[in-house]
Structure formats: C-alpha cells, structure tokens
Amino acid sequence: MSMDDGGRYDALWPRGGKTIEVTPLAPRLDTLEGKTVCQLWDYLFRGDEIFEMLEGKLEERYPGVKFIRWSEFGSTHGEDEAEILAGLPKRLEELGVDAVISGMGC
Image (cartoon, rainbow, N blue to C red):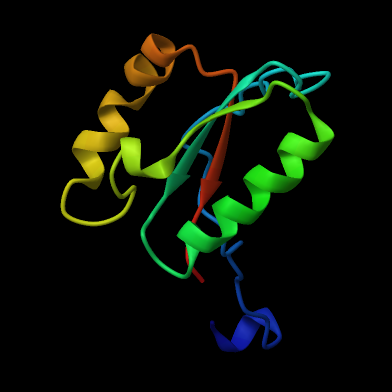
C-alpha cells in the first residue's frame, strides 16, 4: 500500500487453484434386492453395532441382499490403511460387490 492508492489493499481469493477435475459419479442402483453390499469401517465409534442394525433393516426391505462384513477387509484407517485402500478395487471386483457402505467414526 502506498499513500497514493487511497488506502486500498490488494486482496487474494483464499481458495487455491483446482488440482483435479471433477469426474461423474457412478450410476445409482435401482434396488439392493439380490445385490452384494460390502461394509467398510475405520474401527472407530460403534460400527460393529451400526452395521448389524443396518443389515437387519436392509434385509427386511430388500430380499436377497447379501453382505460382506467389515471384518473381511480390515480397518480403513490406521496402520494398514494405505495397503487396504490400494487393494480395494480389485478385492471388490473379486467378491462381486455391487455397493459399498463405508462407515467412519466421528
């Protein structure tokens, strides 16, 4: 600022420039009936209890829905996080997963 600029300050937009492009979302399933649903969890805040409740309600609503429990994958947060997440796409494909419920503690 100088005395000649009338007391005005330059301002910068606080958000940084875009570093990635937005990609389209995967299409939604019409139903979970007969589908295989994977549960992912970070082993924080009662996910074991919550997933059990979700399973019961979803089985009532969508006959034939199958679940691959969170214990099949390991924690999505912590020591093995990078390894688990890196192998996740291949593992989901191998298991024939149609949908994922990812739970995390708050």
